[in-house]
Image 1 (cartoon, rainbow, N blue to C red):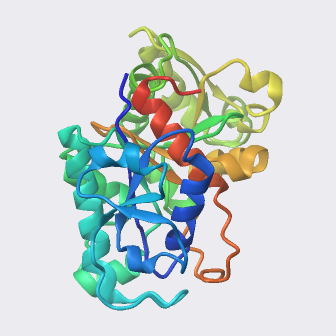
Image 2: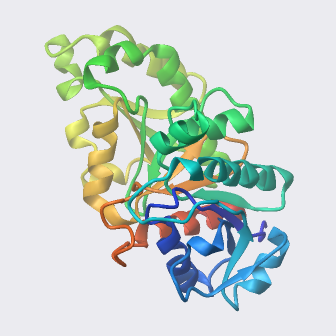
Length: 324
């Protein structure tokens, strides 16, 4: 059982990340151990923190305050106003965290939200997002986004693209890879020996026999049948509008959907505050809260730590092999 601490990256300094970190320590100090990689001067005034020199010091430090592996960020923080001069430090925090997880000094990685434009403006950040950068650092080509909560796990096969682009991006190869990565992760990281997967259709009513689109008939159903012959337990393609009521959810361990909103609307409706982003396909555990930098409320003491608390809990549990 892995009981080493979770590495928590600071995220965008001008966002709510600095406010969340001490709230996470207060909520979880008796439950698990983690440490923040970032600049302690960005924490709210009066925050209890303990500078550490290595992750191994974090478990003992948890009793005293938020363990912080210091990483200077340069210019002062102005809440709600991202500063490109922070970009190099934000990127360095992510790189440091990945190094510590891959070396085994940290059990898992939990990331607070970044602001991609500030990273691009300040450091020429050339990745579409956090996940793609982590895949690059880990040396993997294909990763999958899962949103997980106690009520539901969902995986969108396509993510941040226009709805009009989904039919072109949703290829048999992409869907098959998404299904296989999800199946493997449920076994290796969630401890489910025989995962049950439900796959939605692309069209309303899963095409209704071709009257509302032919993708289900032409290639989605044949692909799922091929994957079943390899031993995967897959239901589908199913009409998305009947996949998420309580009785339906009891029949699968994860739902794979064809596009962003088809997957995220159900989980955000059912369990908005506890949804956690889990990146599947990396050689280490990575979670993140399912919200952004929240510049509009940064510095106002209004940040809700709920999703970040769950993200740390899920990372800790997955690292130990005991996820819910």
